[in-house]
Length: 376
Image (tube, rainbow, N blue to C red):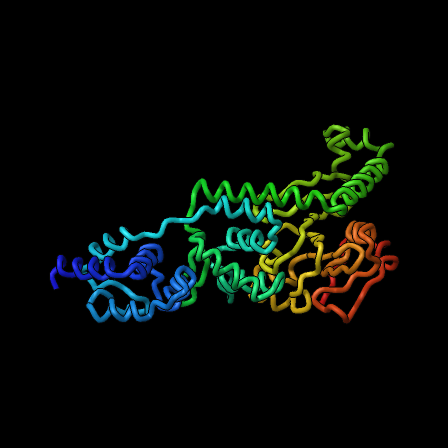
């Protein structure tokens, strides 16, 4: 077939059928990921129809072939012509910023959480789980499978996201990039900051931590001048070695309210969030950490599975999760941790990962000074 004949057939097929234009637009958008599953899912979300017959037509007319990974490809040697025609029917992205604003105004937590996860989770996923599987599982646990699939289809239909799957890759990707994504991240950050600022636990904990830090500094008050002289530091610098609080701010990556605390011999990162996904817990890298969340993660009962193949391993992390006035879990012991957990209205800690097998009362543990990790 001559190149012009190839191009003529393709243009003719597209001009005769609006659905064919949509399908070719998907080929342009999904370069390298044009498996049947990928094309069908996107096409159905966009049009409410199936595209399998259209794909058969393109193969029958000598436009497409099946590649090594079961993806649809144009015939070898005709790439330039296929890309030129497909580009002419490229799908124009929807207004992601407008979608975010509408979700904020309507208080649509599920839609905002889905956008947040698509932005936050690496396109390559984690060992054993793809980007799409991670998002699907998190959304299904936080809300429901039906809510996830509804929003998933909505993002594709509105031309905000495209779905792609090939071999061991599966992900959602925004149509837009660059400045638009930066604006969306900033809008989410502002929304999350305002939302978390409303949590009573933030103000309460801020006061409690400042009190603990002040007590620690007073404890060396009589010796601070001498210690400063010996160390060649100012008294303020010496005081910070026994009591320090960074204050709370919103982390740009995780969108948690975070702070760093030092009291006597104990240091602790504190992260406050409305919900904690397994991906967020896996990817957090500052330890020891106390996660304070409004609701208990459903994956807590199978936490070892959530951290399968994670680096570092769960046993090498020092992590605590607390729901104020309800429950707390940890895989390490520390006086500062127990002080804060107690002030959050919880008097017992369950051990991670042996949840339900062993608990520790606040009174029996708060006397311990240095970190004493659990061993399993």
